[in-house]
Length: 206
Image (cartoon, helix red, strand yellow):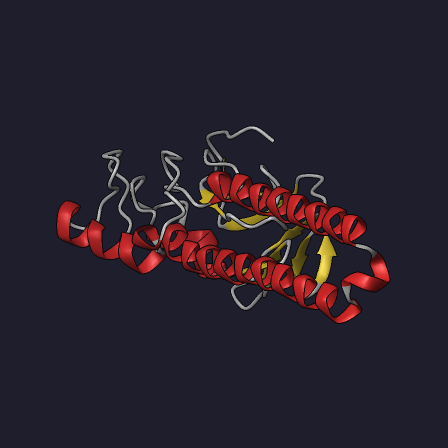
């Protein structure tokens, strides 16, 4: 649906060009849109994989009411946020930046889970005992597990470079302790008065 004099729309998705950016795996690049027709707001799914929901019912297109509970994939979004996007400051990315706290926390938890699983595998190998599985076979199993762990960590970090980034310009943040969500927010306040550290002008925090 194209924007006209009587209808404007905003898009929602994981892609950086959307009006509302939701950087989670359950949301597709261009997941849904909201169209304004007169004083009405219509939410429409864009053939997404994980669906668009209103009051826990999966919808294709529906007129929104102020008390509706909207969910894009697994991510709840308030009616107020959807409507605000029609009149927001184009550089205001405070909501999207705040959502990166959950992205960072999820990354830390998944990374710790992968690393702890590697330790558990080593303990399991010791419990079985080299005499039972043989020294050569034991080394092979250990090497395969180490390779799998490296692949999974690499996949996790590759995904993070796509979603853990400035929600406006897409500049990825380093996956270091110095670039945790809290550290980024503090540096933004101290160095850029709450704006993007890369200089795109996006407002991260007020």
